[in-house]
Length: 78
Image (tube, rainbow, N blue to C red; front, side, top):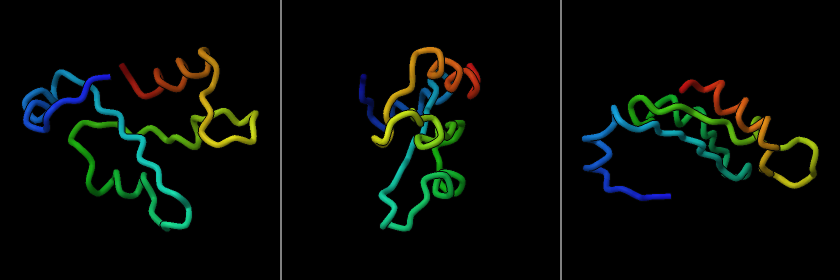
């Protein structure tokens, strides 16, 4: 994973795909998707971490298998 400066990102928004998977602890009473709708980076997409996590375990936010992961990712476009 590479981190970039905000200036670089601003100049390259047409060349990258930004995936916002903001999530907050339930007690904060914050909603990542609601915040995304009001103040996201232009052209970014929202990835719902809860709905795209493995439901077959009692552990939170576990990665799904490769097939399910590809399906989830491709449903958000290329």
